[in-house]
Length: 359
Image 1 (cartoon, rainbow, N blue to C red):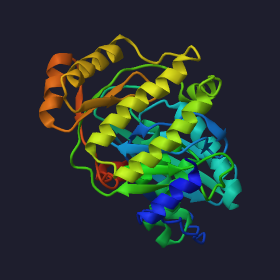
Image 2 (image 1 turned 60 degrees about the vertical axis):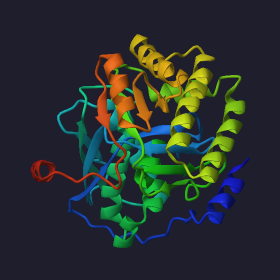
Image 3 (image 1 turned 180 degrees about the vertical axis):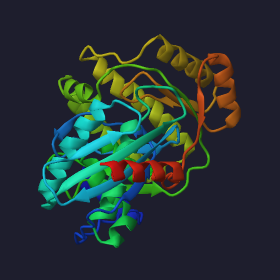
Image 4 (image 1 turned 90 degrees about the horizontal axis):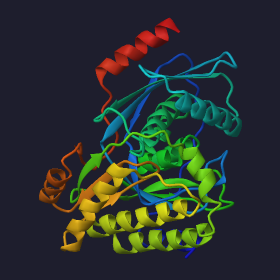
Protein backbone atom coordinates (compact mmCIF):
# COMPACT_ATOMS: atom_id res chain seq x y z
CA UNK A 1 0.00 0.00 0.00
CA UNK A 2 1.09 3.62 -0.60
CA UNK A 3 -0.19 7.08 0.31
CA UNK A 4 -2.25 7.60 -2.91
CA UNK A 5 -4.00 4.30 -2.18
CA UNK A 6 -4.84 5.44 1.34
CA UNK A 7 -6.16 8.78 0.06
CA UNK A 8 -8.27 6.96 -2.52
CA UNK A 9 -9.84 4.81 0.22
CA UNK A 10 -10.52 7.90 2.35
CA UNK A 11 -12.30 9.55 -0.56
CA UNK A 12 -14.32 6.40 -1.20
CA UNK A 13 -15.48 6.40 2.42
CA UNK A 14 -16.21 10.14 2.45
CA UNK A 15 -13.49 10.84 5.03
CA UNK A 16 -11.12 12.95 2.93
CA UNK A 17 -11.18 16.73 2.96
CA UNK A 18 -8.27 18.88 1.84
CA UNK A 19 -7.27 21.75 4.12
CA UNK A 20 -8.50 25.17 3.10
CA UNK A 21 -6.35 28.16 2.20
CA UNK A 22 -6.79 31.28 4.33
CA UNK A 23 -5.73 34.91 4.22
CA UNK A 24 -3.46 36.30 6.88
CA UNK A 25 -5.19 38.76 9.21
CA UNK A 26 -2.66 39.98 11.76
CA UNK A 27 -4.20 40.91 15.10
CA UNK A 28 -1.26 42.65 16.76
CA UNK A 29 -1.36 43.12 20.53
CA UNK A 30 -4.35 40.84 21.13
CA UNK A 31 -4.25 37.71 23.29
CA UNK A 32 -5.62 34.60 21.59
CA UNK A 33 -6.18 31.25 23.26
CA UNK A 34 -6.06 27.57 22.38
CA UNK A 35 -6.02 24.20 24.13
CA UNK A 36 -5.15 20.60 23.32
CA UNK A 37 -5.14 17.01 24.50
CA UNK A 38 -2.30 14.47 24.30
CA UNK A 39 -2.37 11.44 22.02
CA UNK A 40 -1.28 7.84 22.07
CA UNK A 41 -0.14 6.10 18.92
CA UNK A 42 -2.14 3.22 17.47
CA UNK A 43 -0.24 2.97 14.22
CA UNK A 44 2.94 4.61 15.46
CA UNK A 45 5.61 6.64 13.71
CA UNK A 46 9.26 7.40 14.30
CA UNK A 47 11.74 8.95 11.92
CA UNK A 48 11.45 12.03 9.70
CA UNK A 49 12.04 12.39 5.98
CA UNK A 50 12.31 16.16 6.51
CA UNK A 51 13.02 17.04 10.14
CA UNK A 52 12.66 20.83 9.72
CA UNK A 53 9.17 20.57 8.18
CA UNK A 54 8.28 17.49 10.27
CA UNK A 55 7.45 15.35 7.23
CA UNK A 56 7.43 11.74 8.44
CA UNK A 57 8.37 8.66 6.44
CA UNK A 58 4.93 7.06 6.70
CA UNK A 59 1.40 7.86 7.89
CA UNK A 60 0.19 7.10 11.40
CA UNK A 61 -3.00 6.93 13.46
CA UNK A 62 -3.51 8.17 17.02
CA UNK A 63 -6.12 8.31 19.76
CA UNK A 64 -6.61 11.38 21.95
CA UNK A 65 -6.63 10.92 25.72
CA UNK A 66 -7.36 13.20 28.68
CA UNK A 67 -4.42 12.26 30.92
CA UNK A 68 -3.34 15.89 30.59
CA UNK A 69 -4.43 19.18 29.02
CA UNK A 70 -2.41 22.05 27.59
CA UNK A 71 -3.49 25.71 27.36
CA UNK A 72 -1.87 28.39 25.22
CA UNK A 73 -2.12 32.17 25.16
CA UNK A 74 -0.51 33.83 22.15
CA UNK A 75 0.25 37.40 21.12
CA UNK A 76 2.09 38.82 18.14
CA UNK A 77 3.85 42.18 18.41
CA UNK A 78 5.21 44.31 15.57
CA UNK A 79 8.82 44.34 16.76
CA UNK A 80 11.14 41.69 15.31
CA UNK A 81 13.55 39.25 16.91
CA UNK A 82 12.09 38.82 20.40
CA UNK A 83 10.16 35.55 20.23
CA UNK A 84 9.34 33.99 23.60
CA UNK A 85 7.72 30.80 24.89
CA UNK A 86 7.09 30.39 28.60
CA UNK A 87 5.55 27.38 30.34
CA UNK A 88 3.92 28.59 33.54
CA UNK A 89 5.57 27.27 36.67
CA UNK A 90 8.07 25.05 34.83
CA UNK A 91 11.61 25.18 33.60
CA UNK A 92 11.06 23.57 30.18
CA UNK A 93 14.09 24.23 27.96
CA UNK A 94 13.07 21.40 25.62
CA UNK A 95 9.64 22.92 24.96
CA UNK A 96 11.22 26.37 24.51
CA UNK A 97 13.81 25.03 22.05
CA UNK A 98 11.18 23.19 20.00
CA UNK A 99 8.96 26.29 20.03
CA UNK A 100 11.71 28.58 18.74
CA UNK A 101 12.57 26.16 15.94
CA UNK A 102 8.92 25.80 14.89
CA UNK A 103 8.34 29.57 15.07
CA UNK A 104 11.24 30.27 12.69
CA UNK A 105 10.06 27.67 10.19
CA UNK A 106 6.47 28.94 10.36
CA UNK A 107 7.49 32.58 9.83
CA UNK A 108 9.54 31.67 6.76
CA UNK A 109 6.79 29.52 5.25
CA UNK A 110 4.06 32.14 5.69
CA UNK A 111 6.22 35.28 5.35
CA UNK A 112 5.20 36.73 8.71
CA UNK A 113 7.07 39.54 10.44
CA UNK A 114 6.90 40.43 14.11
CA UNK A 115 7.59 38.68 17.41
CA UNK A 116 5.66 35.67 18.66
CA UNK A 117 4.91 35.31 22.36
CA UNK A 118 3.48 32.11 23.86
CA UNK A 119 2.37 31.65 27.44
CA UNK A 120 1.57 28.00 28.19
CA UNK A 121 0.34 25.75 30.96
CA UNK A 122 0.19 21.95 31.22
CA UNK A 123 -2.38 20.38 33.55
CA UNK A 124 -1.56 16.76 34.37
CA UNK A 125 -3.39 13.96 36.16
CA UNK A 126 0.04 12.65 37.23
CA UNK A 127 3.15 14.11 38.83
CA UNK A 128 5.46 13.33 35.93
CA UNK A 129 5.97 10.82 33.13
CA UNK A 130 7.57 10.21 29.73
CA UNK A 131 5.57 8.84 26.84
CA UNK A 132 2.07 10.16 27.55
CA UNK A 133 1.87 12.63 24.67
CA UNK A 134 2.37 16.00 26.38
CA UNK A 135 4.18 17.50 23.39
CA UNK A 136 1.13 16.77 21.23
CA UNK A 137 -1.13 18.63 23.66
CA UNK A 138 1.19 21.65 23.74
CA UNK A 139 1.51 21.76 19.94
CA UNK A 140 -2.26 21.51 19.48
CA UNK A 141 -2.93 24.28 22.00
CA UNK A 142 -0.24 26.58 20.58
CA UNK A 143 -1.36 26.09 16.97
CA UNK A 144 -4.99 26.89 17.79
CA UNK A 145 -4.01 30.11 19.55
CA UNK A 146 -1.65 31.10 16.73
CA UNK A 147 -4.17 30.46 13.93
CA UNK A 148 -6.75 32.47 15.86
CA UNK A 149 -4.41 35.46 15.91
CA UNK A 150 -2.89 35.32 12.42
CA UNK A 151 -5.51 34.07 9.94
CA UNK A 152 -9.06 34.91 8.94
CA UNK A 153 -11.60 33.59 11.43
CA UNK A 154 -12.81 30.75 9.18
CA UNK A 155 -9.40 29.09 9.58
CA UNK A 156 -10.10 28.29 13.22
CA UNK A 157 -12.96 26.02 12.13
CA UNK A 158 -10.69 23.99 9.84
CA UNK A 159 -8.91 21.36 11.96
CA UNK A 160 -7.13 20.00 8.88
CA UNK A 161 -5.52 23.40 8.29
CA UNK A 162 -4.64 23.85 11.98
CA UNK A 163 -3.07 20.39 11.96
CA UNK A 164 -0.55 21.61 9.37
CA UNK A 165 0.53 24.42 11.69
CA UNK A 166 0.69 22.06 14.70
CA UNK A 167 2.82 19.63 12.70
CA UNK A 168 5.67 22.14 12.54
CA UNK A 169 6.07 21.78 16.31
CA UNK A 170 5.09 18.12 16.65
CA UNK A 171 3.83 15.47 14.27
CA UNK A 172 1.79 14.09 17.14
CA UNK A 173 0.33 17.55 17.72
CA UNK A 174 -1.03 17.47 14.19
CA UNK A 175 -3.05 14.38 15.11
CA UNK A 176 -4.22 15.84 18.43
CA UNK A 177 -5.91 18.70 16.56
CA UNK A 178 -7.80 16.26 14.31
CA UNK A 179 -8.78 13.72 17.02
CA UNK A 180 -10.24 11.82 18.75
CA UNK A 181 -9.21 9.14 16.22
CA UNK A 182 -6.93 10.79 13.70
CA UNK A 183 -4.82 9.93 10.68
CA UNK A 184 -1.70 11.87 9.74
CA UNK A 185 -1.19 11.79 5.97
CA UNK A 186 2.52 12.02 5.33
CA UNK A 187 5.25 10.29 3.33
CA UNK A 188 8.62 11.16 1.78
CA UNK A 189 8.53 14.19 -0.55
CA UNK A 190 4.95 15.16 0.41
CA UNK A 191 4.54 18.94 0.37
CA UNK A 192 4.07 21.09 3.48
CA UNK A 193 0.41 21.69 2.60
CA UNK A 194 -0.10 18.01 1.77
CA UNK A 195 1.07 16.68 5.14
CA UNK A 196 -1.93 17.11 7.42
CA UNK A 197 -4.16 15.15 9.78
CA UNK A 198 -7.85 14.35 9.52
CA UNK A 199 -10.50 12.79 11.70
CA UNK A 200 -11.55 9.15 11.23
CA UNK A 201 -14.26 8.93 13.92
CA UNK A 202 -16.14 11.71 15.72
CA UNK A 203 -16.82 9.79 18.94
CA UNK A 204 -15.04 6.97 20.75
CA UNK A 205 -17.21 5.75 23.61
CA UNK A 206 -16.39 2.04 23.70
CA UNK A 207 -12.82 2.09 25.05
CA UNK A 208 -11.72 2.38 28.68
CA UNK A 209 -8.25 3.58 29.62
CA UNK A 210 -5.82 3.91 32.47
CA UNK A 211 -2.31 5.31 32.29
CA UNK A 212 0.73 4.01 34.18
CA UNK A 213 2.95 7.13 34.40
CA UNK A 214 6.67 6.37 34.53
CA UNK A 215 9.40 8.99 34.61
CA UNK A 216 12.43 8.91 32.32
CA UNK A 217 14.82 11.32 30.64
CA UNK A 218 14.70 9.65 27.22
CA UNK A 219 14.79 12.09 24.29
CA UNK A 220 12.12 11.68 21.62
CA UNK A 221 14.36 13.50 19.15
CA UNK A 222 17.11 10.96 19.81
CA UNK A 223 14.65 8.11 19.19
CA UNK A 224 13.67 9.69 15.84
CA UNK A 225 17.29 9.91 14.79
CA UNK A 226 18.24 6.46 16.07
CA UNK A 227 15.38 4.37 14.70
CA UNK A 228 16.18 5.05 11.03
CA UNK A 229 19.52 3.29 11.53
CA UNK A 230 17.76 -0.01 12.15
CA UNK A 231 18.12 -2.64 9.40
CA UNK A 232 14.39 -3.27 9.86
CA UNK A 233 13.24 0.34 9.47
CA UNK A 234 12.19 0.14 5.81
CA UNK A 235 10.29 -3.10 6.36
CA UNK A 236 8.51 -1.53 9.35
CA UNK A 237 7.63 1.50 7.23
CA UNK A 238 5.92 -0.70 4.62
CA UNK A 239 3.97 -2.51 7.35
CA UNK A 240 2.73 0.81 8.73
CA UNK A 241 1.18 1.82 5.40
CA UNK A 242 -0.70 -1.50 5.34
CA UNK A 243 -1.82 -1.14 8.97
CA UNK A 244 -3.21 2.36 8.33
CA UNK A 245 -5.13 1.07 5.31
CA UNK A 246 -6.56 -1.77 7.43
CA UNK A 247 -7.92 0.52 10.15
CA UNK A 248 -9.58 2.80 7.61
CA UNK A 249 -11.07 -0.20 5.80
CA UNK A 250 -12.57 -1.71 8.95
CA UNK A 251 -13.79 1.48 10.63
CA UNK A 252 -11.45 1.77 13.63
CA UNK A 253 -13.65 0.32 16.38
CA UNK A 254 -12.59 -0.79 19.85
CA UNK A 255 -11.34 -4.33 19.17
CA UNK A 256 -9.27 -3.18 16.20
CA UNK A 257 -7.92 -0.14 18.05
CA UNK A 258 -6.83 -2.23 21.05
CA UNK A 259 -5.24 -4.98 18.95
CA UNK A 260 -3.44 -2.54 16.64
CA UNK A 261 -2.11 -0.47 19.54
CA UNK A 262 -0.68 -3.57 21.19
CA UNK A 263 0.80 -5.11 18.05
CA UNK A 264 2.20 -1.77 16.89
CA UNK A 265 3.80 -1.17 20.28
CA UNK A 266 5.79 -4.37 19.90
CA UNK A 267 6.72 -3.51 16.32
CA UNK A 268 8.02 -0.01 17.05
CA UNK A 269 9.96 -1.01 20.14
CA UNK A 270 11.42 -4.05 18.38
CA UNK A 271 12.83 -1.75 15.71
CA UNK A 272 14.25 0.53 18.43
CA UNK A 273 15.70 -2.42 20.33
CA UNK A 274 17.46 -3.53 17.15
CA UNK A 275 19.49 -0.29 17.42
CA UNK A 276 20.36 -1.03 21.05
CA UNK A 277 17.78 1.37 22.49
CA UNK A 278 15.40 -0.03 25.14
CA UNK A 279 12.89 2.46 26.60
CA UNK A 280 11.12 0.05 28.95
CA UNK A 281 11.96 -0.48 32.61
CA UNK A 282 10.81 -2.94 35.30
CA UNK A 283 7.51 -1.09 35.88
CA UNK A 284 6.82 -1.11 32.14
CA UNK A 285 7.47 -4.83 31.88
CA UNK A 286 5.36 -5.62 34.95
CA UNK A 287 2.38 -3.75 33.51
CA UNK A 288 2.85 -5.44 30.13
CA UNK A 289 3.05 -8.86 31.78
CA UNK A 290 -0.27 -8.39 33.59
CA UNK A 291 -1.99 -7.32 30.38
CA UNK A 292 -0.55 -10.30 28.51
CA UNK A 293 -1.77 -12.66 31.25
CA UNK A 294 -5.28 -11.25 30.82
CA UNK A 295 -5.06 -11.49 27.03
CA UNK A 296 -4.09 -15.17 27.23
CA UNK A 297 -7.46 -16.00 28.81
CA UNK A 298 -9.35 -14.15 26.07
CA UNK A 299 -9.84 -10.69 27.57
CA UNK A 300 -10.04 -7.78 25.12
CA UNK A 301 -7.34 -5.66 26.73
CA UNK A 302 -4.09 -4.25 25.43
CA UNK A 303 -1.68 -1.34 25.72
CA UNK A 304 0.03 1.47 23.89
CA UNK A 305 3.60 2.48 24.70
CA UNK A 306 5.05 5.43 22.81
CA UNK A 307 8.57 6.91 23.09
CA UNK A 308 8.98 6.37 26.81
CA UNK A 309 8.39 3.77 29.51
CA UNK A 310 4.82 4.86 30.42
CA UNK A 311 2.01 2.44 29.58
CA UNK A 312 -1.52 3.32 28.45
CA UNK A 313 -3.75 0.32 29.18
CA UNK A 314 -6.92 0.04 27.08
CA UNK A 315 -9.88 -2.36 27.22
CA UNK A 316 -13.40 -2.69 25.91
CA UNK A 317 -14.89 -3.01 29.43
CA UNK A 318 -14.43 -0.95 32.56
CA UNK A 319 -14.17 -4.03 34.78
CA UNK A 320 -11.07 -5.14 32.87
CA UNK A 321 -9.35 -1.86 33.72
CA UNK A 322 -10.36 -2.37 37.35
CA UNK A 323 -8.92 -5.89 37.30
CA UNK A 324 -5.66 -4.63 35.82
CA UNK A 325 -5.36 -1.93 38.48
CA UNK A 326 -5.94 -4.42 41.28
CA UNK A 327 -3.27 -6.77 39.92
CA UNK A 328 -0.77 -4.01 39.16
CA UNK A 329 -1.21 -2.48 42.62
CA UNK A 330 0.50 0.72 41.60
CA UNK A 331 -0.40 4.08 40.06
CA UNK A 332 -2.71 3.75 37.07
CA UNK A 333 -4.72 6.88 36.31
CA UNK A 334 -8.24 6.58 34.94
CA UNK A 335 -8.57 8.24 31.55
CA UNK A 336 -10.96 8.49 28.63
CA UNK A 337 -11.05 9.49 24.97
CA UNK A 338 -12.20 13.14 24.80
CA UNK A 339 -13.93 14.95 21.95
CA UNK A 340 -12.89 18.40 20.74
CA UNK A 341 -10.50 20.54 22.77
CA UNK A 342 -10.36 21.14 26.55
CA UNK A 343 -12.18 24.09 28.07
CA UNK A 344 -9.76 26.86 28.97
CA UNK A 345 -9.95 27.68 32.70
CA UNK A 346 -10.67 31.26 33.69
CA UNK A 347 -7.66 31.05 36.02
CA UNK A 348 -5.40 30.52 33.00
CA UNK A 349 -6.94 33.48 31.16
CA UNK A 350 -6.37 35.67 34.22
CA UNK A 351 -2.76 34.57 34.63
CA UNK A 352 -2.11 35.05 30.90
CA UNK A 353 -3.49 38.58 31.05
CA UNK A 354 -1.22 39.35 34.00
CA UNK A 355 1.77 37.88 32.20
CA UNK A 356 1.27 39.90 29.01
CA UNK A 357 0.57 43.06 31.00
CA UNK A 358 4.02 42.72 32.60
CA UNK A 359 5.85 41.70 29.44
